[in-house]
Amino acid sequence: MIYLDHNASTPVRPEVAEAMAAGLNDLYANPSSMHREGQRARAAIERAREQVAALVHAHADEVVFTSGGTEGDHLAILGAAWARAQQGRRVALSAIEHHAVHGAGAVLADQGWTVDHLACAPDGRVDPATAAIAPGTALVSLMLANNETGVLQPVAEWSRRAHAAGALLHCDAVQAAGKVPVDFEALEADYLVVSAHKLSGPKGAGALVVRRGAPLAPLFRGSGHERGRRGGTENLPGIVGLGVAAECAARDLAAESARLVALKRRLESGLREIAPDAVIHGEAAPRLPNTVNVSFPGARSDHLLMALDARGVAVSAGAACASGAVEPSPVLNAMGVPRALAVCAVRLSLGRTSTAAEVEAALAALREAVPAAVAAGARAPAAGTRA
Ligand code: PLP
Image 1: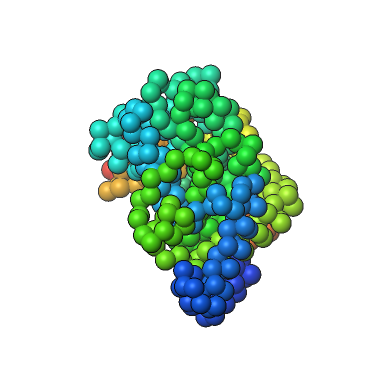
Image 2 (image 1 turned 45 degrees about the horizontal axis):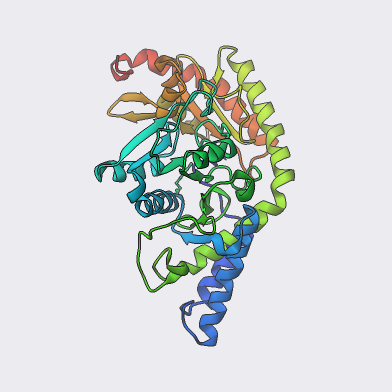
């Protein structure tokens, strides 16, 4: 299988698997226990905290371990909003955020909060010139890199605007961490989220970075774990795996990102050779080195995904399919991509295991799969898009 779905999840690095196995087998004591075995487990967690902090240029005591990106986003958004509730019950989420962020927004809306959505420009960026923060907003949420298009967002600029408006800033850096440099200090964010399985670590582990002094009401209250910010006995193997993944990602970042940019360039020029009318979404904006979101007009997302799967290439659909109908992605919608084009979007995301030979093989598969998907769409008009 040629795996071009690294934004969905990544293969675990061998060093990570080894460290996790050692953690499972050897570091079985409770990290909160006072005895020596407990302290060995605690030391492994504190080492991972330093490794994560180093990846995002934060202080180790700012790192709170979570079960991944979804929990990190919920903890930041709900934790900040609840801590700030007396000052106004309003938050602003960018229109292109992940479900993990919109889900936390839905919890607040259920509790009577006003949830604003910051508009996205056609190039895929949430442009401070065209979106505004309403008075009384407690928190602004903007991701560092979009998971569908890879478009990088002007987070530092939004942090300054949020702070000037008296609001806190949460940044979902799940797709950015390990792919581009992430500097918590320079971003001036109050909260930043990473997830291990997007950077060659395990699923079900992640971290929320909380600026010293930023308010945070915990979601889980336990026996003072994570300095009272996240109750529950720590997922030691997952945390150790996240730490090693973070250290490896930081070490390899510059070389790996240059390698991926070269592969992405070749992939994009190949896509254009296959279909000169192909549209690469977010192409005009700065993007992650690994992500290509492309529409081949007439080749519906689900048909193309299946045609590629049959040829041994794994990609993601850039549109959601339910009961034979295709719904364009809210991200492409927010960018103003016409519906007919948005339902044809697929996301190809490269990663650590991707090679030049794989890119060529994927292009060969696409050369056959695009016309096959167009033909499948013509044969099955009943299962076509809703008007
Ligand atoms: N945020 C973004 C931008 C993501 O891409 C994802 C996962 O796809 C998440 C949050 C959720 O992370 P997790 O799968 O670790 O819960």
